[in-house]
Length: 273
Ligand code: DGL
Image (tube, rainbow, N blue to C red; front, side):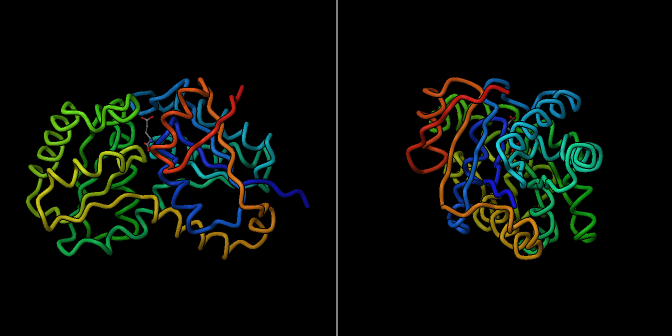
């Protein structure tokens, strides 16, 4: 049987915050990370564009020998995952699997809220797709979801401005706009894998008593469960404890930013899609 690494994908650097947690929980596997930095951000792009870009990247992972790919990007999970699972995988290869980050998160989110009122912060694409309200309603019909898009947060993070005063302005503004929609929100989900880098500022502008959730740990736990429940997929994942990093843009830029997200030095290679 052909074994290969587990693919982890994001439009840019954000998925590294998820990969970091996955590697911590499942260190035995090999991982292949791809950031489509040349075409990031995905947040403001149309369904069709995000779908086309994501599909190209998923096919790249398959060419590298991956049997399992995690879309560690909410925007791609919201706009492309279902079509890839339902229309493309049956045509490309029925033995391949592609997973996202929205389902694992919505499966558990209701457990964190006492008031049954959750706030979601994400990109325009994720918010407009309505994926979170739809998916949360399936698992927690008694939970009310309020969403707010933060279009400036990904550019702040991608441009290394997440510690700057400009970030304070946008974080404070967006959190207060979300909280103005309901005074019952007791849990805020960072539904974008870039946002954990703004965590300190987010905490600073969020009233005490509100839980701030990021997805890395949740997604890693869910992947662990998935591999246990699907031994046929697990058997196709190679186990040498390695991680390789690819970007569609400049590797120098990638390496200098990526370590901040991943928490360790990163040396990437260029991916030609
Ligand atoms: N990291 C992506 C997400 O989780 C968003 C980044 C982008 O807009 O490209 O939604």
